[in-house]
Image (tube, rainbow, N blue to C red; front, side, top):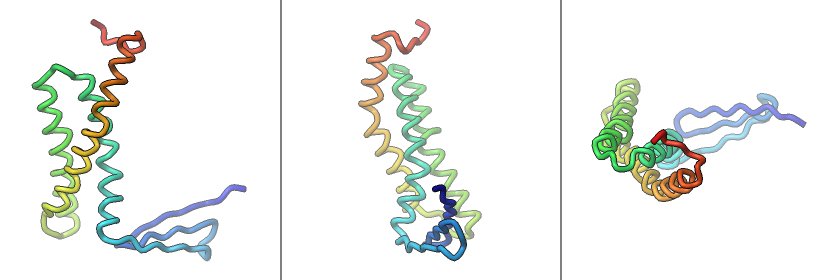
Length: 131
């Protein structure tokens, strides 16, 4: 049987409604856990895509340097600036560090598997670079 789920969150409380308003489940998320979920959901997929782009631009030093600036540092700065201005709070170096840690950590984790996959697909003829 199908169920309807609605998930909302405010502050540090997540609310899960199953099928009807009366069937409510709440979950208190600690502040650090909230930040990990929030920043991880944004920066892990972004860094995974950047890892793929880094793999495709091997040997192109200037392009990779530009990707570090525009793909890792700039999104972290933009998000923190947006959150600070819309939330009427100060710019947080801690949140900026969390963003950068997720991006750089994910890039380091996916770098070798992506490069190995790209090498395998290019030698087997599945990935054509047009050269």
